[in-house]
Length: 245
Image (cartoon, rainbow, N blue to C red):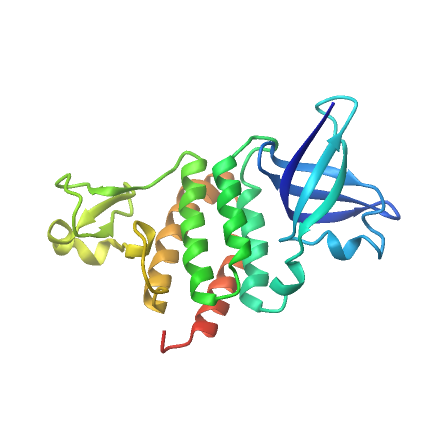
């Protein structure tokens, strides 16, 4: 059995004296692990870092085996991403979210989204916006997508400012006003394109919204907790953005 594909490194762990097991999200073969011979050596280890893009060849005798990777780095961005706290935490958090997906289950759209995100993590507020959108995308991929295109009460598509914490459906300004204290705010950048990076208040609102549904629909039923890198990422982003943005 063998195939070739493009992938992004999510993580790795040592295997034996000199080898490593590398975890990728690939374009056509989903989240996939493979053995890289010599991957634990000083020569190869710097290239096999989370955030780097690779061309991968996988080979195994049987499809269900771990198999072996041969990797060629096509975009070496890990060193740049590790220079800033927010992008370091972002890469770790992205990996934690993607590990919620079944192994070897293709998600080509999610791969394309991840590729865009890791290429543009340098700017803090942009990184915050992209990760909040990615969390929405993950909810959808896992079968828990929110309905943010029309009002739950009226069916209208205009002036959607809130989200119900129970149904995950959007609510318009007029319909939601009497219950606004019980509803989540819906930052516009989660549903439409924006010309400017979001304000800190909008980032907080977005992560409060996505965090509620990730906890309620994904992590709590699995008996697990939200990754600590998520809170660390948001704290670093808000610190870097500052009160003026």
